[in-house]
Image (cartoon, rainbow, N blue to C red; front, top):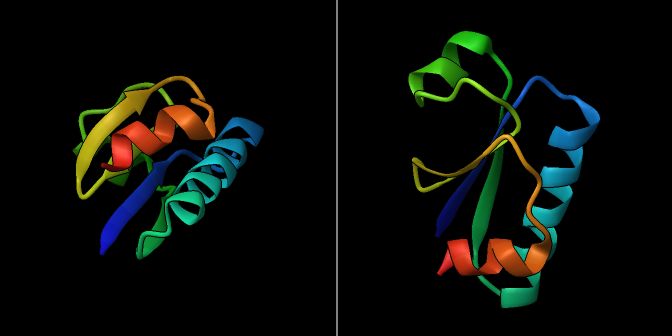
Amino acid sequence: MKKIQILGTGCPKCKKLAENAEIAAKAMGIEYTLEKVTGITDIMKFGVMMTPALAVDGVVKVVGKVPDPEEIKAMLI
């Protein structure tokens, strides 16, 4: 099971990233959990200074932008 984490404080871009990640995971038919990491301290533990960011299985894949579902699919493989 993939662990998808959205790192951000809940801004519109963070919500869009969560939406796109869910679309990508559902389209691929993979089992996943989606976690929103909203605490600044928790976000900084990932070494992320800009939000939103996407982490898959604890590995940061993208920072400071909102990739579309097609781009996220490649990150979930």
